[in-house]
Length: 76
Image (tube, rainbow, N blue to C red; front, side, top):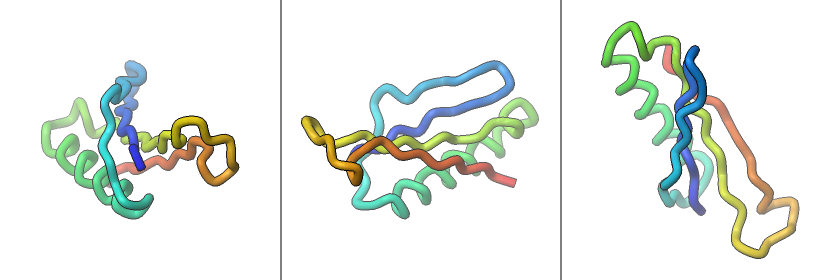
């Protein structure tokens, strides 16, 4: 499943237009936590940011299990 990791901060949304393949939502959330941790290391500017994770639906699928879903990950 393809997941997208958008960065959101006080200036707006910076969309991930490529995404990454992950086996499940837990793996995608772990990836988002790593992104958030790396952003937090870069300085004060990114400490107010968070990573928005969006799951892409399977092509041609209309089932409720394949609808886009999202989770927010914020590094403390």
